[in-house]
Structure formats: structure tokens, C-alpha cells
Length: 169
Picture 1 (tube, rainbow, N blue to C red):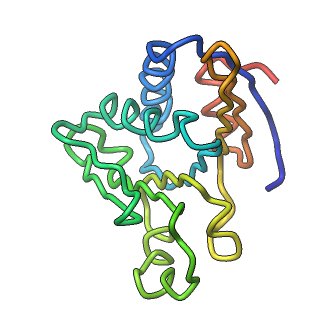
Picture 2: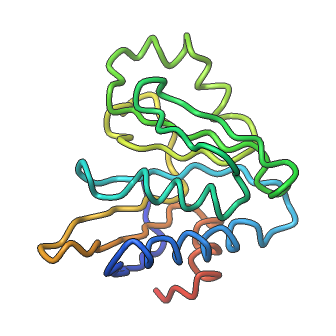
């Protein structure tokens, strides 16, 4: 991925992650155009990838249970009513992904080609089949339990999102 812009943040606690997710949701919904973006979430087990996705989905209007796609590989959410610019959100967890044939068999190529938001945890497990991300979010647990966060924009769309978040190069 060619990095066009970066931003670093520190989340001292879960509330900071939730506040970021609310701001991020607003930034994603700022365009009138339908969204077609891929975001990768990187970090070790327990870094907060799934928590961030849950907070983001709540901020975008998802009600009810938000399941982790750890075993199913993908969970989808239709946000046509609550966030029409976003439309369909596909949340992937590639932690147990091991067979590239599964990519074709499951129709993931079609999902990534279609409009909507694609959120991928453990993208390094799908190297070679996963398209280039617009935005990478790297989470790292610090000794005090806080999270250092790096946002890496790889497309003009992602640069715009970082600017909406108040990010500076």
C-alpha cells in the first residue's frame, strides 16, 4: 500500500475508542456519494480491533447483537436506513482463514468489488487475495493498557477521512 498520509492517536481507555468510532462514523457519512472502501485493522490478539468495529457499527446505527465473525469469517450489516451513504458493511475476521480457494468459494471477490464498507481484521492472513486497503488502522497495547493507534491512508478517500477527523499530516 502506498501511504499518502498518517495520523497517530492514543486511546487511554475504552471510552476513547468509542469516541473515536463516533467521530469516524460521522467522517464516513460526510459524503453524499455511496461509500466503497476497504479498511484493514491490524494488531495482536486483544488489541481492540473487534471493539473498534463494534463501536463503529453502533455509531452507524446497528442495533441488536453484533457478532464477531471469528468462525463465520464474515458478518454483514445493511445500513441503508441508518447510514445510506455507507449501505452494506461487511466485517471480516481472517484469523482462521487458511485456504485461498475459500476466497472464491465464499464470493469475497464480489463483496470487495461491490459498493459498501469492508472492515478486515487479520488481513495478513489473506495476503495475495485481499485487495489493497484504502485505510489501515494499527492498534498496539501499551504497558498501561492504553492503545497507540496509527491511521495510514492509502487513497484520496482515506486522506479526506483523516482530514474530517481533524488529522494533520
